[in-house]
Length: 229
Image (tube, rainbow, N blue to C red; front, side):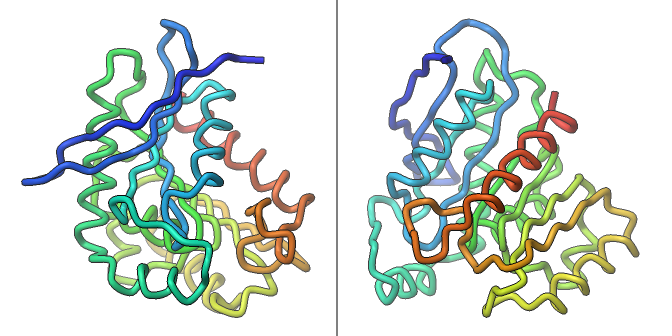
C-alpha cells in the first residue's frame, strides 16, 4: 500500500489565511492534485479520510477548512454553520487552495480538480464556474447550479446523485443535465437508485449505501484520471 504524508497547512486567501488538511503520496514523483470540499459538518475525520484515500490513489489532496476550526456532528449545528457560511468567500478560499496546490513542485499537471459532498458538492460546481484553472469537477449530491452559472462552466462535470434525496429532486438533476447539454459542457450525471442523500458517507450508517458509494468512488477516480492526468 502506498505510504502517505499528511499535515495541516495554511494558505493565503485575499487578506487572510485558510487552514487545510493536506494528504499526499510519500514520494518525489509528480502527481495530479484535487481540492476536497467538506460537507456541512466541517473538516471532520471523514473528509480527512477521503483526502487520504485520494492520496493512496496517487493524487495530492487538500481539504480546506471553510469553517476555520469549527466542526460538528449535530445536524442543527451543522445547518447553522452552513447558513452562516459566506459562499462567495468559500469559493475564494477553494480557489486559493487550488492555487496553493498549483504552487507545489510535485503537482503536475497545473490544472486542479475539485470534488465536494452535499454543501461541498454545490461549492465544487460554483468554483468550477468561477475559476478557469479548474480542470475537472465532481459533485456528490451537490445543489445544481442556476442556469446562468451553468453557462459559465467550461470544465468536465461529473454529477453523482441519489433518487431518494429529499433535498435535491431527480427533476432538478435532470434539468441541470439539460442545461449542461445545452451549453455543451462535457458531463456525466448518475442517479443511484435506492440511495439517499449522503450515501457516500461511511460514518453515517443510516444513509450509507456501500454499493453506490463504491461505484461513485470508481467513477470519481476515473473522471479525474481522464481529465487531469
